[in-house]
Length: 187
Image 1 (cartoon, helix red, strand yellow):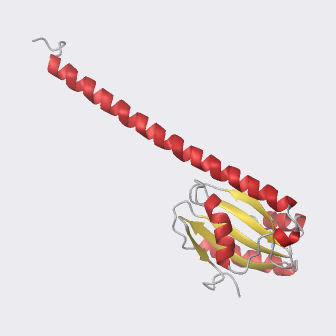
Image 2: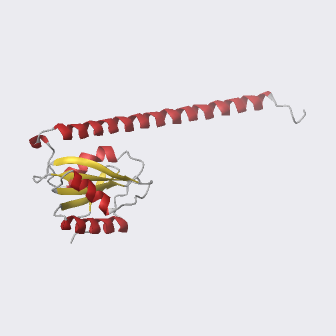
Image 3: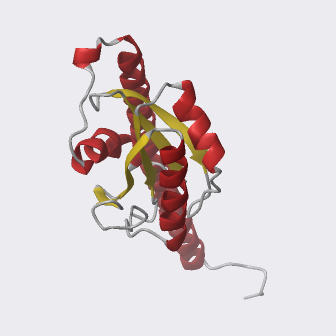
């Protein structure tokens, strides 16, 4: 047999391999499509929640009594994010949520933060108290040295403006860590 001819068995094997590869690619695309659909659903739920916050009476707003309250409020939306984001939860004098503002979106493992930008959002929303919340797409909720440094600088800046920074929470993979509970960045 010449080298440019193929045996029927070889052709059948290559066809089967091609079919298997196509099936795998198709299954992967279906899976990615389901994931993207779920992400869109969660984002839509979060947008509706934001709209509800804007129109709700003060007595209907969620109250934050502990880090778990804040974490549980944002975890469904933040857990599906593929890039690190920093959000600011703005509270009134009774620790009721007035707004949740996305401040930054970074890469898969970092986000560059300017304290002035965070404070600007807090002042525009007339914040009495705030919580910083960001996600770790890696699902490792251990705070980094940068997380602690940003927290320390933000808490000091809030004190100058008479805004109480209640906590900095890291969420990921359905878990959270409170920097305040761990004594990181708060004096």
